[in-house]
Image 1 (cartoon, rainbow, N blue to C red):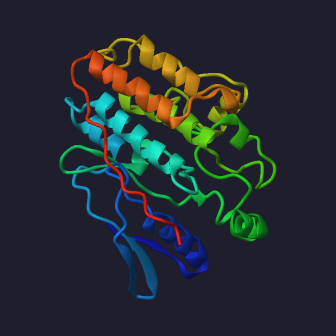
Image 2 (image 1 turned 120 degrees about the horizontal axis):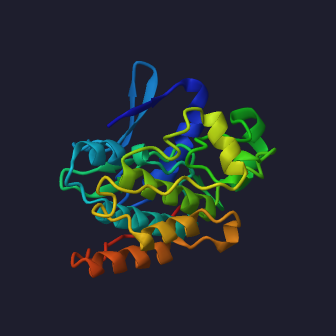
Length: 261
């Protein structure tokens, strides 16, 4: 699965490849390498037959949303506890791929950063390489949307957790967050006000796993105070409990941490 980048973005592409190359976890998409073709560079990863998680749950009535979310949470916990931590920065259903066996793989590290190794470079070059804020307000925390400088717009483990709560809503409902609001600009205003998406009811939503416990977890992820949001490890624990309660536990995923050189 190649992804290209024009020459002006070569530093950004190299940054993404450097991050991705050091990651090795069952719920993180593997990195195969870089490929040059027709004066373009491509990031190469395995082909995921089932596409992205959002399309997968929409196209498969029997898709196990709770299981997919538990796997995404494990992948996110791996990223956040990596040394140094990796912030994804753009977690959405379309950036989570599904393998041939139906397992979730976190992908697309285009907005990620190794929080220690590249922080200084990012601060020095942010005005040249990227605007203070970017991304998608339907998945973004308010502190990112209102940021006026690159430093204020820096993604954190807490903003990733906020986005994970939105991914939960996205997969359970098979709709993007705030699907009833057509304009992203309007969504941004609503998020800044601290308002939550409406809780969905009916249409078999509880059968897909969205009960009171999952809704409370989402609200916790969306806390206006970043310090009050759960960490990924806590989310893994809650989702594992939910899986066990319904009698379909997922064995702990195995990971291999490689040293960053």
